[in-house]
Structure formats: structure tokens, C-alpha cells
Amino acid sequence: MKKIILGLFLILGAMSFALPKNLDANKLKKAGYEVVRDEDSAVIFGKSTDDAGITVALFLGDINAKGVNDSIKATAPKNQKFLSSKETKRAYISKYKDTQYNGFTYSVVAKNSKSKGTVISFLYMTDKELKDADLDKAIDKTVNEIESFLK
Image (cartoon, rainbow, N blue to C red; front, side):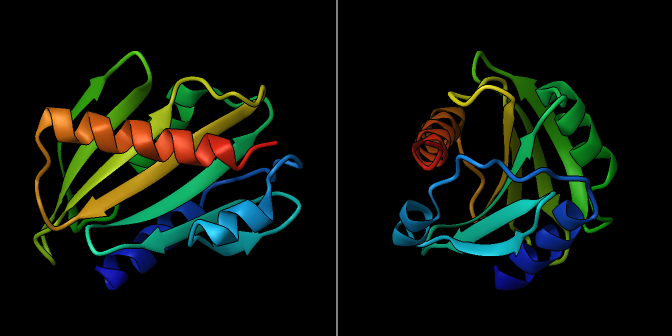
């Protein structure tokens, strides 16, 4: 699972990011996240639990959620086999099967954020394929947690 997270950090690192000034770094660290990239133009953080690995990228500025979603799809590594995508009221979701480690990756881009001008994007990686209800619950929980870090 950790190799998957590292690989996905590299994918997100290849994209252009902007650092939101309203990120509560202390709250982020207390929740178990580790900041991987923190520059004037980028913030990427992640954590690993017993159930999943989560890699988050926050985009600030004149970027729309649909564009971020399309960019992530276009830059997915070869070992991530695209399975499906769907759109909910809250997010764009793409599902991938890891052909190397047999896990599943869900790429999620929130349509709206409580912080204007910020697009929340995260990769939710797990060994199990999630049913729709479980996936929706995990997405809501993760988006709410990430939004709680924004001041």
C-alpha cells in the first residue's frame, strides 16, 4: 500500500499546484496527515490507515474541478487500469484497479469547497473494492475532514 501511495504522490507532483494560505497545518498534523510538498505553488499531504491510503492535493486559483479531474485521468500511471467514472452532487469520481498490487484507487475531485477558489482533490487507495454506499460514505468523511483544515 505504501508503494502505491508513493507512486501517486509522484503523479500529483507532476501537476501544477497552488498553496492555499488558509490551511491549518496544526490541525492537519493532528489528524495524522504528513505534508509531502509545501511550496508557494503546491501543497500535497497524505496519510495511511489500516483501511486506506489517502493523498490530498489542494488547488487554489482559477482552476475548475472538472479540469483537475480530466488532468488526473490523463496522467494515471500504466499500472492503474481505469475501470469507471461517475459524477455525484458532491464530486467527480474515477475508479482504478492497481494491476501491480491488486488494490483499488478512487480519484475524487470535490465539485465545491467551503473555501472559495480552492479545489480539493484526493486519491483514496484501498485493498478492497468499495460498494457505492461505502464509497460515498468514505468520500463524504474525507471531504469533510479536508474542509475542516481550511480556515
